[in-house]
Length: 295
Image (cartoon, rainbow, N blue to C red):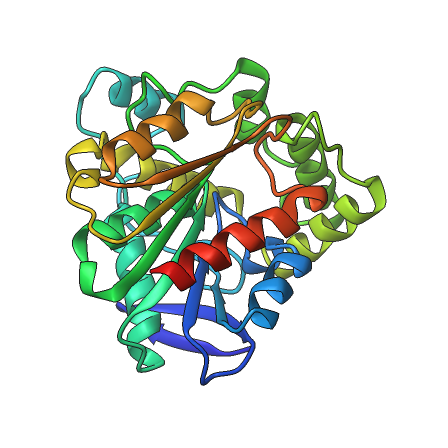
């Protein structure tokens, strides 16, 4: 398990594929470690001719926990965000984007294709906006612009992600919690195989899921506010993928991202919720590979 120091933070990462191939970086969503990327997704990109890099974002997996700084209650931070008020946090999305750039620096990669899912999509957007020379192409999956008025989750979905495992230090309890979350926010048109879902969640729990770190990542998102002014500056060729049945980040959020990024292409899937269902992975891989090659 490689562990590096990048942007002043200790980050864990893994890579697949041929190191001589073009690099593609996968940035995972809220609180989840890199193993939550489905194997078929990672393998599909590697077999298509890409050097696939995955990292544990700060405060997740085996990467460093950021315990210093302000930690306002999440409900208070959410209310301040909706009202357009400043939200204080230990770090923001720009810091997380700089972590990704730091990984590229460590590996002596000047430019990479960047794929982000959910919170990771927001990190990828910020990286593309603020470090355009580092991003060959951008793929933003089930993500948003930070505009709270198009990003309102359904109450049950929001409740699931705000809920904590009964015993945050017990991997079995954490895995059970993650299974419940994915059952709530997952794709109604493509229900996950129960055994495969539990195995994936157990892998994530073993690698490291930190409820306090997840809260800090959520604060980073809220502290970064509405980023539509940044989205319009993105020059990288952009693909936006979103589910039409996403209960956590509504389809309107994905459509807004595609509308604000110049020239972005929007790919929507009926029956897709807030996950990467196995049945759709071949379509995701095909679309991303075609997008990256065109770029």
